[in-house]
Structure formats: structure tokens, C-alpha cells
Image (cartoon, rainbow, N blue to C red; front, side, top):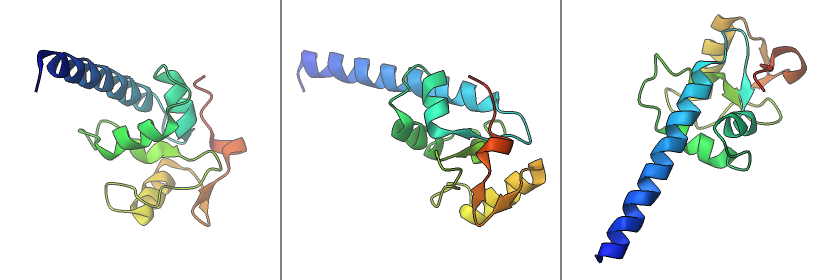
Length: 117
């Protein structure tokens, strides 16, 4: 590994870490009874085109209790089939505990989407 590679790696991982931290901060703001979309969180984190990266960050959520990643759904209101803390049924149950109605593994965004941006 060259010095240049090391500098790039440091830059890349620092940039990724900063984005993940921004994602976690945004998700922490979603109130109980509301959901946000991956794209919405990406915009709040500073890169509206990084919805997939939001999913990656949430998959690596370091604080399950403090960062309610289960409140993030896709642009159609669908739950995540790969919800990291127990699967789609756990995500559904947690949302229902928050007071969010989930029908056919989908949330009505017109009723439950957080207006955080």
C-alpha cells in the first residue's frame, strides 16, 4: 500500500463515517408514530442521491435502542425485507408499537411520513 492509497483510504473512511453519523443523527429525530424514507434521510444527511448508502448505514447501526432504524421505509412505504434487528416482522411490530398502522408490510406515507424536511 502506498502513501497515496493510505491517504485515500483515510479520506474515504472519514467521509463515510461522517455520512453515517449524519444518517444516525437524522434517524434519531424521527418521532414515534412517524416514518421517513431512505431518500428523505439521505437528503437530511447531506446527499439526496445516497438512499442506498442510508440503507447500508442502517444495516450497520451501532445503537439499536438509540437509533430507531425501524422507522425508515422505502419510497413506497414498504418495510425493509432485510431489517437488521430481526427481520420484517420485527420492524412491523415495532412500528405498530409506535402507533404506525402497517398493512401488507406497507405504511401509508400520506398519513405517517415525518415532515422533517
